[in-house]
Image 1: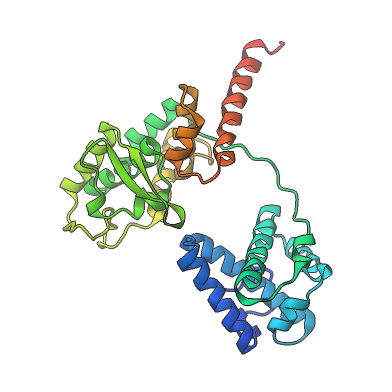
Image 2: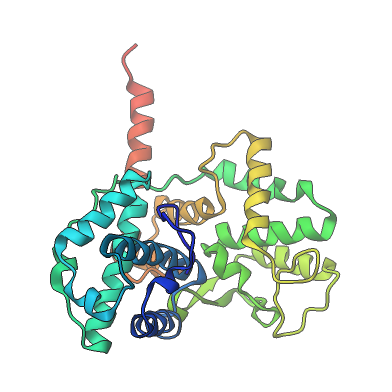
Length: 318
C-alpha cells in the first residue's frame, strides 16, 4: 500500500501496524487478489485508501494499529476519518470508495478471521452525484476509428486502431483488450474475453474489427507467440493503457471532441448505440460482462436524455 494525499506522515502505512495486524492486512489483500480476483487498478485504489485509514488510526490513537483496535473502533472513529478525507480535498466519490475499502476489510475479518465490528455498517457514506455515461455519437465514434492511427508510425497506428475497434465494436474494457494474448486473436465471428474477477464471456466480433486486428498482426514487428501479449508497446512489452489514452487525447483534439471522449466512453457508446437500435438489455448486460442488470440499465437513461435533448432543441421557445 502507498500513502494517499491525506497522510500527515510519508512512512509506509504497513509500518503503522503491529505484527498481527500487518498479517491480517496481508491476508486480506491476498484474498482480494486471488479469490475475489480484483483488478490491479482496484487493488491499488483499495490499498491507497486503506493505507490512509491506517495512518489516520495511528495518528488518532497515538499507537501502532492492532487487531484489537480494529475490533473496538466506534462509529465516531470512522466518521472522523471520512471527515479528514473531505477536509483534505477528497471528492465525494473518492471518500465513498475509501469507505467501501474499509467495509470490505471488515467483511473479510468477520468471515475469515473471527473479528467483528458492526460500527462500520452504521456509517453513512457521502451522497454521490448521479452520473449518466456520456457516449460519443455514432458519427464521432466512426471518425475516431478512422483517425486514431494518424499520429503514429504505421504498425503502431494499426495497433491503436485495432484496440479502439475492440472497445467500440465489441464493448471491451481497455484492460480486457490489453490483456489479450496472441492465442486470443479471433478466427471467427466471436471471441472469448476474460473480464473482472476472471469471469469469461463470449462476444461477437464484427468483420471490420477482425480485419483491423489482422492488419495490425501482419504489420507488428514482434513475434506473436500464443502466450505472448497481442498488443505490444514500441519496446515489445505489453501495451500500456496510458498509450491508448494518449491516442484518444490526440484524436479528440483533432476532431474537437469533449474531454469525456475517453477510451471508456467508447464502451459506453457501444452499449448506447446497441440500445438505441433496439438491443435487449439482458443481451447488452451479457456483452458488457456486467454482474448486475442495474449497471446496464443506466444506458436507458442515456437514451432518454438524448431524446429529451433533441426534443428541447426542436421545440425550444425562441
